[in-house]
Image (cartoon, rainbow over the protein chains, first blue to last red):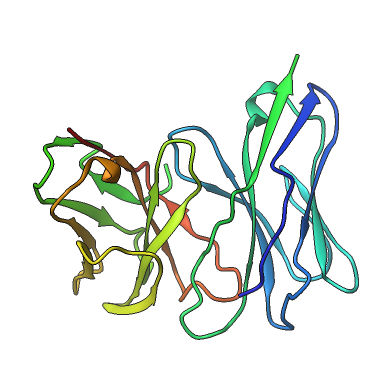
Length: 111
Length: 115
């Protein structure tokens, strides 16, 4: 199971773009990268998933370089409601692989 | 609404007691995962079931056990409860086995307080 490393915390202001980078140096060929968001006392919510290059949806973009040893979650024009913990997960097709969450990045957005 | 239902939402019990937490996955999802989240702690993976069979095991204590029934709902049993077991317990479900970055859907959690 690939180990992930993220910043513990980040601060931003409303309207700014926020980029959270996750390192996963020992990512395997079949591993996918998934990001979740969690608000206090709520279950995590899927944000975005990718394998390589760039993926974009209505809430975020995910940038994955060619070597796939890191990934960057980009949140455009954050608002106060984006204050949450963001988790980067790497999971592959190994038997018994489950969704393992690290400590995540606590994003605080101020006005 | 994620489609995953957990009951009860809140539970207060005394040390030494036993409780059962219930999870109904989204319709069609075969995998169920259980997590424990203590105050200011991360999500600790406990156990995963896929279509009735145990699929993966995390740091689940011997006092804890789980199962997934033929109708795919799951129960997490916590026994000989200690104060340190007080936490939010989340259930999640996914269509597949959890491999290849499957999107999982989380319930709202059961808040367990042991007094």
